Amino acid sequence: MPLARSLSVTSLSGLEDWDEEFDLEDAVLFEVAWEVANKVGGIYTVIQTKARLTAEEWGENYFLVGPYVESNVRTQVELIEPTNPILKRTIDKMNASGCKYAAQCEEPPHILAHFHEWLAGLGLMLCRRRQLPVATIFTTHATLLGRYLCAGKVDFYNNLAEFNVDKEAGDRQIYHRYCLERSAARCAHVFTTVSQITAIEAEYLLKRKPDIITPNGLNVKKFSAMHEFQNLHAKSKNRIQEFIRGHFYGHLDFNLDKCVFLFIAGRYEFSNKGADIFLEALARLNYLLRVNHSDVTVVAFFIMPARTNNFNVETLKGQAVRKQLWDTAQTVKERFGKKLYESLLVGQLPDVSKMLDKEDFTMMKRAIFSTQRQCQPPICTHNMLEDSSDPILNCIRRIGLFNCSADRVKVIFHPEFLSSTSPLLPMDYEEFVRGCHLGVFPSYYEPWGYTPAECTVMGIPSISTNLSGFGCFMEEHIADPSAYGIYILDRRFRGVDESCNQLTSFLFQFCKQSRRQRIIQRNRTERLSDLLDWRYLGRYYISARHMALAKAFPDTYMYEAQDPTSSSGFRYPRPASVPPSPSLSRHSSPHHSDDEDERYDEDLEAEKDRVNIRQPFVAKTKAGDGVPSESD
Image 1 (cartoon, rainbow, N blue to C red):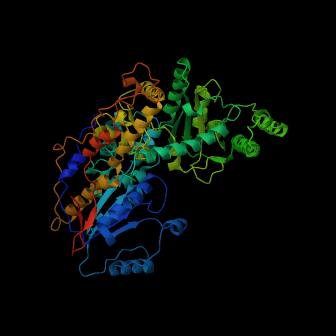
Image 2: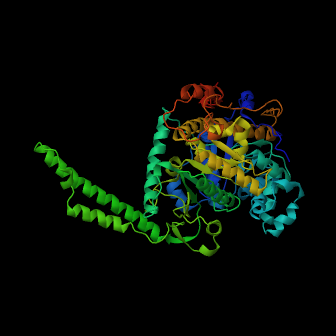
Image 3: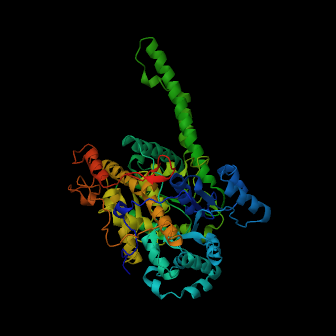
């Protein structure tokens, strides 16, 4: 089942024709979702990051509707009185007699309601059932049945046409929720989803072809100088190295300067998120590094929340030992420095043999003795409540990656989201990602994929799949994704073993890169962040809203759908300078010095890439009428 270009707008070059202007002065937009000011999953990030751009377009006519959670209201919501008298009367009416909508004005505005996921779908169905004058949009970020089927380890994408959807939903006891989702998709004026792969899925499972794809974006912060984000990478990497020094105390027999940090993060869905194939690839990578006598050590982090009762004592002890060693070294350094200072003051060169006395040696010997360890460094940083049945730990036991001295691949399972207040690894997620070298997300079911998108924005290369929305999006818009640090793993048309071999090859080639090649690749990856900025991807949502208004109020609004065959798709060309991958390098050996004169001009390459990106959307206000418009 090929990923055909069959949707109304699927490429950035199609945006060139989006020049129509809608008069939104008498229109009101309500965006309804369970994750408005309620962080549960990725939809919270979509709504939160998109809110600023939408508010610029709609002004005070933009409203978000979500569940009232007292703890979230105190931290995320500013309570204010509405300035719109119509809205104020409506809210007063709702407060007095329950959640009953009542529009009280002689000329009611045109109302557009955008509903996210099946949890909000009931409101859409009631709007259509009661024939309210409301334009409706329904967006599914992942089909409910699709997530359940993939978790059941079925050959999902190659058998979409064969599923008896009603029976499958009933067997999994989700039939009532599935019916809500399917009805909302069928009733909406405009039905959207986040990626081409999910559009195919929705067409078969929800029985409606999406009208438009609305990819997820981020608010991109650009640095004034290219080296700034590289400096942030170095700073965060140093903090990860400090954690590694403590975690592997007594067994720190590898060079931290030749360490490569990999990570996978997200919901603990062992198969859906690709943790199973990642672990298998790590075992194969460990074999390749050992037989090739590589001096590179790989440390792979698994950041997936699971049920725990506390930190692992051995892990906490490691960080305490590291801190004790640091304090001892600082004390000896101060005593040494004081003696050196006194010797220089009297005009004598110091006698090195007398700079350290017995007390100094005693302190250092005690510190060294404290680093003795009889056991291997722990795999998991916490005490797991279900250790014997945990999928990651059981897989690690099967493949034998126990952080032994002979292993070139080390594994650390952190079953808790990162926090800057943690006594173990005091870093927030963004800082941790910046310090890693490669994000690995070999997901089998990933409708979009914010984790690789966040890596791209921060200039960190990543591995995604052709079954994720992000991977499909990058494959469509970049001529050679791997040259820009976006590796696309084929999990659609290859078996599990073949996909695992391909992932192992990606990891092995990455480990053979020189430090300079990694820097070049990070520069290229960071330049792709413009593709993921809401200033560009927000246009898809604008088009969906215009389409819904035109369908619901044809006498007032007009919208001409884009011809899907008129656009050949935006493509980043392959970089003309030195390739970042050793397998494509003109040198026979992958081990290059950092000073070798390779053909690479960062400014020239960046300028060529900038030509391929159109100026972003900026909502401006027309003089005198207060109507937002698009800049040229």
